[in-house]
Amino acid sequence: MAAPRRRWTPTLAVVLVAALVNLPVVHGLWLDRRLAADGVVRVATVEAHRERGDAHLLQYVVEDFPGTADVDPDVYEQAVRTGQVAVRVLPDDPSARRVEGEVRGRLGLVLALVADAALALMLLLLWRFRGRHRPQLRLVATGDVERCPPGARLEPVGDQHVVCGDVLEIGDGELVLDLGDLRVQVLLDGHVNQVGHQQPARVTGRLV
Image (cartoon, rainbow, N blue to C red; front, side, top):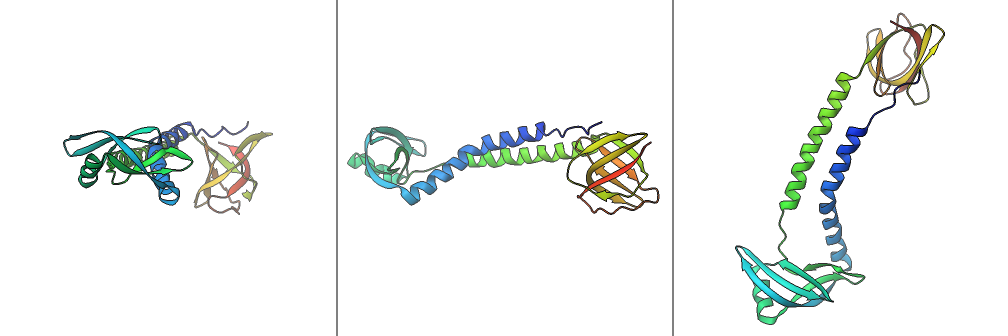
């Protein structure tokens, strides 16, 4: 029979969630880099302003694009006095912009880091659970263990089986092959193992 297919669905789900969690942070860093390299300064019109706690909020319009920004007190006072504020924009995309003196909170970054730590823990638990709870067969070798092309395989040949997989463990007179969702403990029974750790190996023997 063919070896069971590798099931990466839980791992892929965790990786997908990690990508979605980090996307806003990565996009913000990418936008900052583009603005620093290619951005130009435009003068925006301040349409409204208000203070809320420690926040100094400006509502502005630059090149017909409205926006709101929390700025430092000095920029806020000058904007209130002049009715204008400097905004760095991308010439080919005015919607991508940053107000000069804008105060940006770190809450998003902190939440992303916390989520990353939780996802990393989930991956570790998945890896350990997968490794400990995979079914394991036992095979007594009737020939030497040899190198083979990569790929998992478990097929009957007469009253024996041919097993191909990566060498997961090497012990005294035995080794363990990784076939994805299945592990096979190979008892060498006097035969020779010619394959090193984490390399693809092929062996023929009897399941016991």
